[in-house]
Length: 444
Image (cartoon, rainbow, N blue to C red; front, side, top):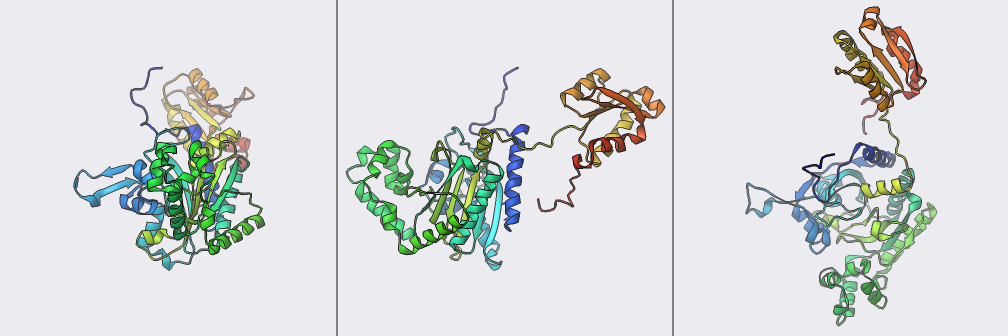
């Protein structure tokens, strides 16, 4: 096979048909649980003003410093207002939409979900892409530990639906208020005075710009030093501790398994109180499939009124990888029920309407309408693993019949041409027909 002249850009990938069956399966699982819980779907632009992400995610986070895909307008090269960025996540955009469209006037909380591509100019590696797909769930307008518990329970159900919950641990922590974290950050900086040279280069930089990121550092030297450092829970206020304890009681009531992780902080500036992540049971945080938490300060960061919020983002490629590792087979409706073979211009003309009618009745039908021989067409039917074939040659056109062949049994018979559709429907059975209609599935 000749080498391709062009390839996907670095850090991107094609979602081929086989993988699309998994993507569709996962999307359906998310939509099903969201509809049950009253969530409404929202779509935001793929790009936003970059200030939205700088203000909410944090100027000194890895995402903003190194990973934003910037989009410059060629028409106003010197206009700062024209600086856009491809979305690295959904939450900031959804909150911007909440403010812009006056959703605070709706019954609260407003529950929204989004599914689609996000972009980070990250260093590509296993499970980490520059263009990737996420589903995002947001609960905006109320602060109550029962909402946190319900969201986590809903996520557990989604992971159970796609049969990977037993491959994950749910790590949870409470990071307190912004004031709590400021006090802790100051104490952490004081602790590391004189110890900076023992930190790896990346963590030395984090100590200056975002010290909390040291807590989830993967560097062994950093983790050894942290064992004698002040801990975040020493600075968490009583109100936050009570909130967290009530949340854990609710999770216990729901039978939700969790691991309390005092070092879990998440990498975005807007989180407060509850934070949680779903980790691979073997590789732990190196292969998390998603995470989230409470972001009560975010609306004010965007210029809105103080409004509590809670959310989660799941990485769809990582979840699909887990599904494959678990041996999960995604349901695939892309089978072929009937292959229609023909020979001659009159047969071709008659087969066009026949193929259309079969498809309208819910029969998955392929038709070879080229100039190939019947022998070649039947080889195609075998390759597509068609259950039945309908064969129409010049003689059959004259007789007003068509040959019905059972591909598995290797038997065939002639039937009247106008009986072909009802005969096929009878053989397949009504439960095997794909009778999807838009009217039946409005809202998907």
